[in-house]
Length: 215
Image (cartoon, rainbow, N blue to C red; front, side, top):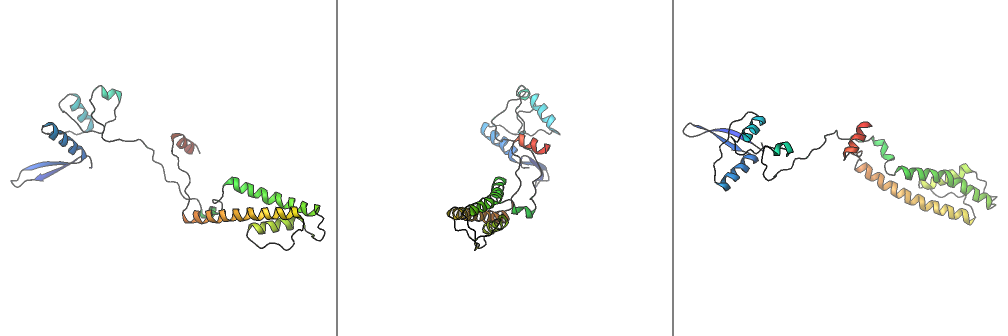
């Protein structure tokens, strides 16, 4: 089953009959009803014997799952293809990555690299703008500016030692917009990744299967 099943049934008069079930038998029975002939099942012990009986024309028809190959077409006539069988590969299901890596998942590698570059470069640029603007009352170094900008990125309050130069304020405003957008995107993706765990990508093509085996 579900293709073929045989059951020996005891009749009321004590005789035994074989009842056939399954999709293959129902198909043969439907063909017999349409063409007006009786189905008589020949006893066989293997698929090799089934094909041999058909080849020798001892058996008229066989509902066998048979691939249509050129060598077989020379020996057998194939009817309408009523069921497709596809070849596939069975592989182990990819396991979930460790939960702590969910901190990294929300953003791609390119975004993380860009953010690190901004965090490293912009504090130095802002410090140069402050020095160029002659804000002598602001005695701050690169480390302090770096701390303030990382604090803005993490959602902390603005520092009180803000520069009075227009260029540095424009840079701080741009950084605030960048930090707001990045923070919203990160928190949203982090919530999604924690709610629906992310599985590693699965190979879908033959080339991807070969590459995954090589790794």
